[in-house]
Length: 514
Image (cartoon, rainbow, N blue to C red; front, side):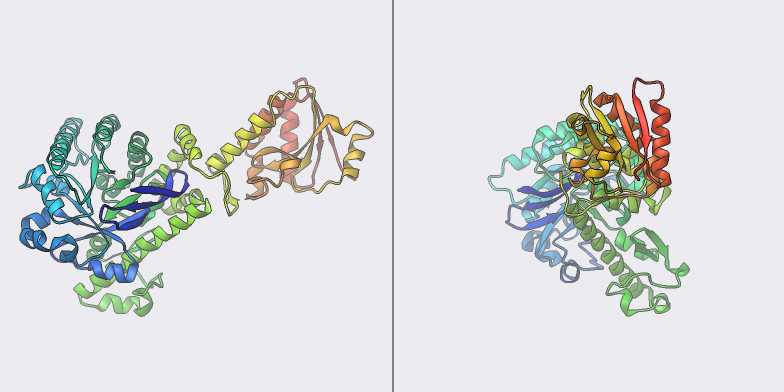
């Protein structure tokens, strides 16, 4: 049903196959389709955006188009040949307190209209109190049990079924809910109640919720996020393990004259240009757009917003394939201070980074770009430094080392001059001046050491200098010869090493190549 074909961090490219045989590639953005109005049709999305999956509301169909939906099915009703996911009315429960249908009725209706991916009737937590969160989890679990019971009476089921996790910002409740839903054996999982957090720019709490859910549920099954909102958060939720996410923001923003960009939203009345070359923006000027009748203007802005959302998905997938998803996060994190805070909290979570490291490829078809102290915590860097400690710098007592500038090409003859008749076999030749600390010269071209680009001043960060000290201590070197360099940052490393190693039982000599 679901196959992972590439991964980076907790993000992955996967192939999801429905019971009807239709396939989609994840990560996938699901535009919300209003089944009654269809302001931007699913057919248009398919033809212009290559949309292979959309989501619509089963409860609205149940209340307003029941007979027609039962007669022709949801695909013909919204005129879409791809995968259709149906929400069950949970949003209506959040907005109005209840719906006029039971979990069993909604479940059977979703099966009867031949939806591909179905969501049971749940009770969203939102940003309610602890007591309300407990009630929403309890009611959701009861609804899911009722749904599975009525479905068990069907010999053949047409849909993949989604277990929706509630609990909101109450992480312990969210985990308990996820644990119980995991035991029920759903085909997919979903995380509810994120919209209020995104509207309040509480990205750090949203990321915490996603992480908690992903850590509980099975890695081999997809995770959906309801109401994902703005495309600037797409790479972050994918990196945390979300495979599918829906949103109606493309149209809701357009109705409010808000124009989506990859780094935020702009209000039309404050815009002087259209900073986009999509098929909408390349055919009209900002002044012409502003002067259009409201309905036509909203339609065009909504289409532009969709182009931005789908472009973001393509960029994320390419980053996963290239093993550079975290670099995309570093760029996107600067979109908003609250988003950057959420990103920093991800990068300071050692437990999460350790799990991400397990799913980050050992090799990449492109090199690494690292920028600052936060970059030094990315999984590839941590893994490489740990392997150096575990496999190279471990109990080499009695050995001696020569530290050579990373950028310097050193011939055997020059090494002989440095040693002045001493036995070369007694010394480890190590390169200094990279974010990895010390690198044995024999493996300087092994990935990722020579495939890493970084600013010069990064090598004098305390983390890098401390790594060198840790490597020296772990190896047990007692004699170190340091070849100095003209580069001021490399000279600074030498000064710090001499200072930090003073007082230890280590002989350190600084020399130069002539």
